Image (cartoon, rainbow, N blue to C red; front, side, top):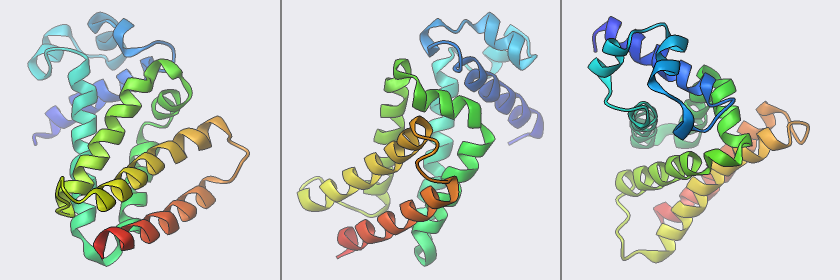
Length: 179
């Protein structure tokens, strides 16, 4: 992807996450988003037709990174946690707001569904394999909700402890799925 396109899309994503700190996505206007991202409305429409597409791009990029990590058999849990760490830290305030604000439940649910379908596709789990699908549901829901819980209870454990605990949980549950 052209560096200018990548820079513009990142500016719009960062601006969106910044605005999500104070209001739900449904109330964010393109004008407000463009002002925060320092891009023109024309530039916005060259990349997107609506604000939800920015979040969809974010979700799809996250899915691609998770997909790549799952295809790397060497260290799946470490790779997944590293991906979440990079995603979280690149949009910390916005992701924090997604987790803390009940108005963003639909966006959190969207991330959970993406993670589940990515796991299912990469691990080639059929719709008929209910026990393995349940384990994938547990993993994907657990990963997303561990971050939600951590943001809501910041003194519960350190971020490093959260990541290490998630690594262990993912490893244990992926062993069930791969049997």
